[in-house]
Image (tube, rainbow, N blue to C red):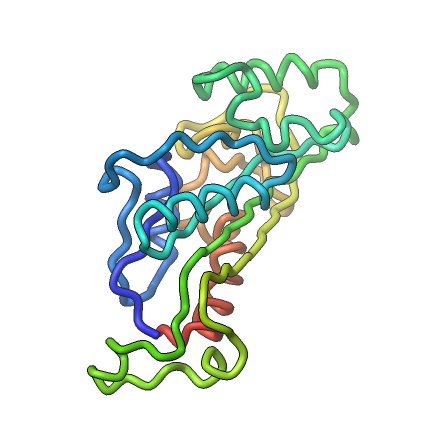
Length: 226
């Protein structure tokens, strides 16, 4: 199986940049800016997986191109797992990063140090279609990957991968890099926030990076891509 193009099912430029930097595959990667007339995708799932699957499936059905979707968020157990799937809308629709940070600081102002534990979670879903009798592969002399040919029936399929990184929430924002809640989150084993790290530092340990590593393993195993 060979893919010519994969669509990243997101309008978030920060996510696009992080994902492109961590996807060392010989396939053209495009984002939603190249897609016209895409229906609005309401992220109404109760889990990150439900939202990611809905986004990837919708883009695939609209474009007939394989789609990779990311749904991520911050979870604070002491707040009943807030903000969770509402991370991007925690302070209302179209909230800015500073508004999200202010809302979280306010919600956590009375928490003890041991209650400031939190984690970031990313769920990736890759939605694509597989045809065992792929005429294009036959004409080009490319044999379908043995594992795919043996295990997968024809039709749409998806690959899921998840990543988590644990840490704690500071009482005030620090740093100017990253996006979202990065200025508040200090990962375990570090004394600086994601926003105080370079992109390379963050990408080496982030929840999205962990999910992408798992995705790449499954993607290559299932599709035969390099």
